[in-house]
Amino acid sequence: MGFLPTFGPAELLSQLIVGLSRAMILFVVCAGLSFVLGVLRVPNIAHGSLYMIGAFATYSFSKSLTGSAGFWLALLLAPLVVAFISLVAERALFRHLYQREHLMLLLFTFALALILGDLVKIVWGAEYRSVAAPDLLKGSISMLGSSFPRYNLFLIFIGLLVAIALWLFVNKTKMGKISRAAAVDRDMVGLLGINVSWVFAGAFVIGCCLAGLGGALVAPTVSITLGMDHTLIIEAFLIVTIGGLGNMWGALAGSLIFGVTQSLGVLFFPQFAIVFPYAAVVIVLLLRPKGLLKSVW
Amino acid sequence: MFRRIIHAKWPGFTIALFIILLLLPPLVPRFFIYILGLIYVTSLLAMSLNLVVGHGGMFQFHHAVFYGVGAYTIALLLTKTSWPMWVGFIAGPILAALVGLLIGWFCVRLTRLYFGMLQISLGSLIWAIVFRWYKFTGGDDGIHGVPMPGFLSSLNSSYYFILIILAGSLILLYLILKSPFGSTLQAIRDNPQRCEAVGINVRRHQLRAIVVATFFAGIAGVLFVVLERSVFPDLLFWVLSLEIFIMCLLGGWFTFAGPILGAAITVALRIFVGKYTEYWTLILGIILILLIFFLPEGVMGYFEGAFKTRTKKVAERGNP
Image 1 (tube, rainbow over the protein chains, first blue to last red):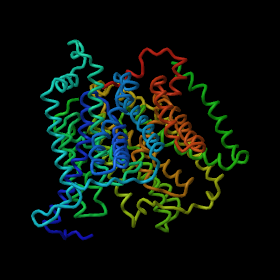
Image 2 (image 1 turned 45 degrees about the horizontal axis):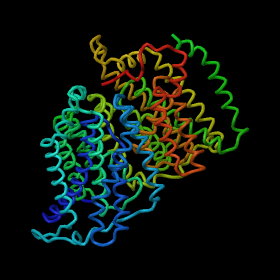
Image 3 (image 1 turned 135 degrees about the horizontal axis):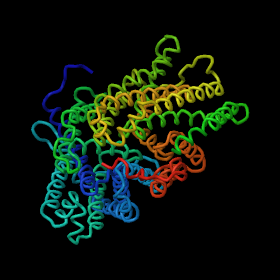
Image 4 (image 1 turned 120 degrees about the horizontal axis):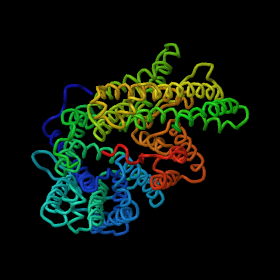
């Protein structure tokens, strides 16, 4: 662990790709969290549990649907499973609580996270699971004198796709415009004859769906286990805070900061790499207390 | 008004309870003594958090860090140095308060959710260092078999020690809350702008409250080591921070003794429900959701509120 870095541009580049792909998974999850925060003003701790459910569901689907289509179908079905769970939770519980103060909502979603965590334990057990990437994404591509894992490049591609899709949804569709309006003034939207309750339900489900997608995307890169929700959700909250609460581009910026500082930190202090993202968050919050970009709160 | 009456009644009850708890060790099985000890330690931790959360209105999201710092300080001093043992007992709370001063100094610059998030990131920084610094802190294994001075060699003597320290700490916390400082703190919770306007230095009061709370969290950390003789990085993990937060809610965070009740319920639930099923957090989650729907002021808050006609719903207080 020397202070003089002993790496060349090739290592730097490959670590950068690792960091970017990690950032894209974080972005997919955080965009959902940020969307829910922006529209519903709910700091959803259970978002991490939904991400975990997404990963476990991907494991089950790709195991039962063998063949090359397994993973791709799982990528589609896992978010739907999560969407269904979140719809039930929203209609049964959340919608009665929107008027409560944030601290109560935080504790409520934590309670939900506890319940979902144990349900995952009941359904899938406490063993480690792993998912194989489809053949198309196995191996790596040689470029610029170093090789990059195909799956990481795929993640970066998906992350950009999600960003564009979300931008189009929020800015170009009616539903997106209504949800943006509801984020600013929900009473006014209600007065215009729009069923705000269902707008909230829709926004919540979309946000949670992204958590499920993030879980499905991360599945081939990590060992899926209980507790993966805990490490993720805290990172996700820090990311949306430094990005600006409810701001999707802020979530992207925050994810990039978080992912890249950690992967580059590995080059300098492998043992303490996990310290770097937290230090970056501290610096950002001290310089810009309300986040990098404009918060909708 | 009722608050004063209820507290005038409570000394008799409290002293009787204290004496009963002191007489318990020879009468009940060791297992219960251990659980009671754990409840006392957790109670003190929850009480210290409630000073800043319930009475101070600050989003102290990562209180467990200070507990962990206290615990690690005494564990490291007792295992790695040959200094007299009492140094560890004193250094634990003091170092926790110093870390509290440092983290709090940054945090009071921000408000509400941003305060909480900054604290989580600063706290996670400390957690990450403890978690990864294998050579010094033992990393994720922690430190086991911390030696204790002779007078704490048995479980019963540890129990007495913890109970007495807890009682002393609770008296101090009560006096702090009833002092002008405590009243100012509660006024800041209810309306920071108005307090600022009448010339109260809001940030300085908040920082002082954080230092006091973290000092007591450090004491709780030391007591944890006295009971368990081991430390591990989960003591500084944010999940524990949220669990203590829940204890305050469960008991009632606008009451004095509520967090003790919350801690007792949570610890007992974990151990007794945990005996029958490994899914005790499921039960805790369900209880919590029922509580949020039906008893938003906590168990203790509900019983106090049942006697009192409230002019203002507590749930409405502090809406941002």
